[in-house]
Length: 112
Length: 115
Image 1 (tube, one colour):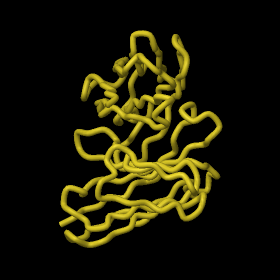
Image 2 (spheres, rainbow over the protein chains, first blue to last red):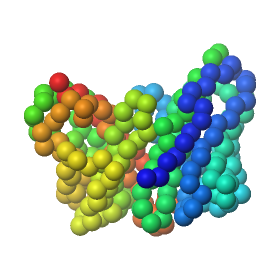
Image 3 (cartoon, chains in turn cyan, brown):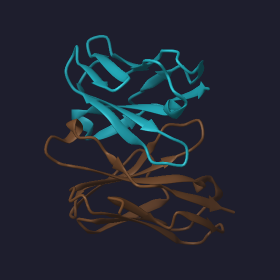
Image 4 (cartoon, rainbow over the protein chains, first blue to last red):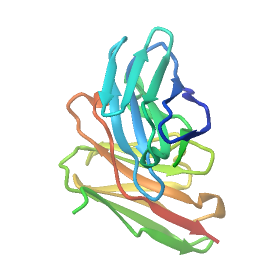
């Protein structure tokens, strides 16, 4: 059984704060790490797919880093806005399993 | 129009009833997936299909069956619904090029309640 751990489980920040959260995954047989953003009453949408150790990706105020040797990825949000409020999911792909294993997510609430 | 659609969006049914959830996609993707979401748990994979003739069980397939009627359609059936199958169900698709490298595209979800 593959475990993908996300922390914290939930987070409340004020508008303008920068924040980050963690995804931990097994470091062996790494193939890809996905980040999704899931707003309430909507569908999860992909933010990043990361495949290489040391990868850093950025989309607007959101960025992510990847360390495959130690098995973690960080997601950063700079200057949080209320519209960033969502659950952020990470998912781990092991090539031999041909499927994604999702973490439970980090629920971010940004207060105006 | 949405690329991945699910019907119905909401359904209330009774224990023991058979129910089918349908998923259609216009993205032209070969790979399709069914997940369920329960509060406090991550998305869990029920079944996945790499093409019309290739269907595989996920981690929680007991009590479910699927049918891949065409590249664009993937249906999930609950043969005899039970209350602990009450959940939010998502269909997703992805391209085949290099499997794990491709993001998955999710439908809007079906909220199923089994009384």
